[in-house]
Amino acid sequence: MLVMHFGHLSMYIKKHKNLTTFILLGSSKELVILLNNKSRTIFFFFLLTLLLFVTPNLGESQQKQNICELNFSNLDYSHFDFRRIKLDMYNYELDSDTPMLIDSDSDFISFGFPGNGSEQNPYLIQNLEINTPNNFGLVIVNTTKNFIVQNCNISAIITGIHLQNNSGIITEVFNSILFGGDYYGIYSYMCPNISIINNTCYNNEAGIGVFFSNNGLISENYCYVNEIGILAQFMIDTAFVANICDNNTYNIDCSYAEFLNISNNICSNSRVGIGGYAIDYSFFYNNTINLTDGGLIFYGCDNTEIIENCLTFNDIGIVHENGDNTNITGNECLESTRGIYIRDCHSTLVQENVCNKNSLDGIYIKKGSSALIVNNTCNDNLENGIYDSYWGMYIAEPHEIIGNSCNNNTYGIQLDITQRIEVFNNTCTRNLQGIILKDSDSTDIIFNVLQDNIEYGVYLDSKSTNNEIHHNDFINNNRKGTEFGKAQGYDDGFSNRWYDKINEEGNYWSNLRNKEEYLLDGLRNSIDPYPLNSPVNNDIPHKTNFNLAISVISLIVVTLCTLSLYRKKRRG
Image (cartoon, one colour):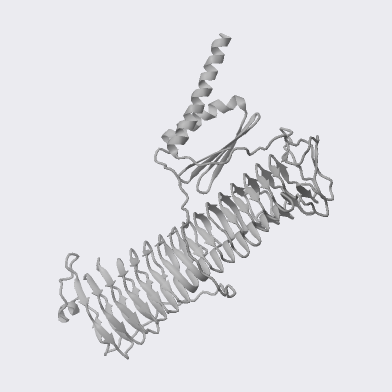
């Protein structure tokens, strides 16, 4: 088998006798093409043209290795709680004795702040020391000028810095310390272009709260020992970058937002690392989250990208529920209860994640439709490498489990009450069972490597029917035998077929011993009537870059064309 990756486009090429299988995988779609010898040359010409003219800018896709190297021990996990706190905007009443109140542009001049309010020379409100028993420390509302609040130290009963209805191009809070507020350290409401940078907020209900404040930047803040580190609602096109949130109940909590960039944050020691409800078209990249009940939690979030985050020692690494068109790629979810948990989602890509050493499952999927689970590494989990349940009861389109490595788990891949699943080109080794089906129908298990599993490479229970298992390599499974026998596969179901009916080809069995058919363990006395004499998956799948892929395809095309011309000349 040849596996080629071009950015988020992957191509699998597998040839067996007179049948060639091409699978083109995009970020959420796939194209499967089966060709015989006669049509193969035409397809290669088409593929070369497609790659040359449609995807010239795609580069090599390299999975990020060792995203996180954290080492914690002696952890006590509490039961995961899906409760979400909602600290909404409040109706404030300004105190007449507020230490500093600015509610018009003229007040900047009255207070004598340096600057003139332009973009080039914003007003500077700086070096304030306010520790007041009043509700607010600094209030700036209803202004149009540009200003920067910097190097201040403020504590108040309700909120340290309160910003509202400020429409300047520059509205910034920089390098200040805010603490002790019953509501917020820093509060921003309807302040477009808000920038909150390099502040320390602690011992507040929420360290930073931003609402209806679009096109903002919340960056490099340190929020600790608050109920919520950073709270954001009703935001568009805002970046939350390189913040550190520690020992808050909820570290970063966002909802009702679009086009957010939440990247490079560090969140630890909390109930939720980064959580969100109804966040659409947003990007979560390279965040480091550990020691939480839930690392990244999303409800009802559509068109999101969850890319290359590091999640360790959480109850659950990534939780995604009731969302559509989600890309979960290149994350490391390690040493938690579950690495990735997906429920009631549609059109989901789960790709190139590392989900190892979890106390339950590497990847857990329940309900939904049209999922592509591809090229993930799920090793050393105490229960399942990949667990998939209830998909078939709801789907309009089948989904695929392709190219994953599931090793040293109890079950490498478990399908529980599913229909029409494609299990293709996975490697399941050193598990109790390699692939197990419970009450699952119409599943295709093809081109997988099932090796050195303690019991069976593939196990079908009594309620699993109409499944097809062929062109797999069964190598040294069930070597000690079970009470049912020493075969490498087990079948208690009905109408399961252990061979390809069209090509009359079955599976490779390392213990075939020159028999003409292979008898499976199980009550049905199922057989593989067409066992293969040699392994199907001799070639180790490998990645190549775009230029190499073009070279390989070009070489194949040139060779085929040369052979075709040579044959025509001989006929002539």
